[in-house]
Image (cartoon, rainbow, N blue to C red; front, side, top):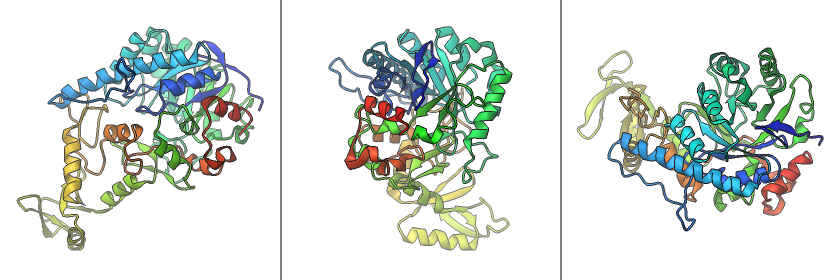
Length: 464
């Protein structure tokens, strides 16, 4: 492949970027190795792990009696972890490549975490990538700390809004614009309400429109990073050097999962080698409210089944809701349609005896054990998001979204910590890009081969 170096974050590097993946899935070790191979390594600043003097990971425990108190603990853990990962990445990179930190704008305390890590790891981080929301303050914060910023967007329209409101004031610190394909990328995706999750669009005209918008702001030399759905570069040959797209880099989020330096547990790596096409799908279960892309495992199957056991209700008899249905420990009645009463009794006969109310005036039916787990997770909320549909936490004075907690969702902090640190890959959330099934088809991974990061970067440069 005729890959030309690009200047990113103040240095010429390979136009190959490791995608940042949250909660200990891309860390200092993987980012440092990617940078050492000549590209841009990215560690996650989302509740990153920190270590004691003996080098052992410190479990992130929460002792605060209120959500607000636990939120303060979470922010402190996140800052300490981000600084620790920056130092590890810097040492491994040895001055080669560039090092970026990825943060989610919608994570709880995002600004405080970002500021805290940049203060504590001064000079070790060259750029900040940020998505999951509209990070208007990203440019201002980056400029103040002397690092480059890399907004993650999914449309020219989104970048246009960011530029006009904030980024146009700090053009010299805009390192690149990351176009993350909302149908193909892993984790949380930026699908808008006008886009059909079942109908993926060709990324070329969308990226071409982004380049046109950027050129209109005088950003002809600013790279675009194509993220989501990138596997073999030979499949993107028409993009490389294309004057309609301008300078271009490619971001790999899924492929770096399966490397020797990747911190994910062995069971997760083994699972990746067995995925078949269709194993990864877009869903709306995330407590962020965003679409997300995840593997169809036992965790996702339970969420789908939980949501399917759902009926509408009203507090009083009205319209089709004419039949009383006792719910709760005291058997207080709500009213449902006759057919829904039959469905509810059938579910109860199968052991799903507990009815839980949702913010949308529906009931879901779960086992007593599942209800206890849902309530325990909601009560134990530590404010990991700026606003959480599952627990109804919000980073505001009230500490609440003002809506009922939604038992159709889940505690994302808990499940991502579990899977990242080796607790049952089948029954925890496993994010993946939609190309994850290609591990099983790609001859590079034949016989269970797991490359080093350097071997992977060298392989990518061949086009495959």
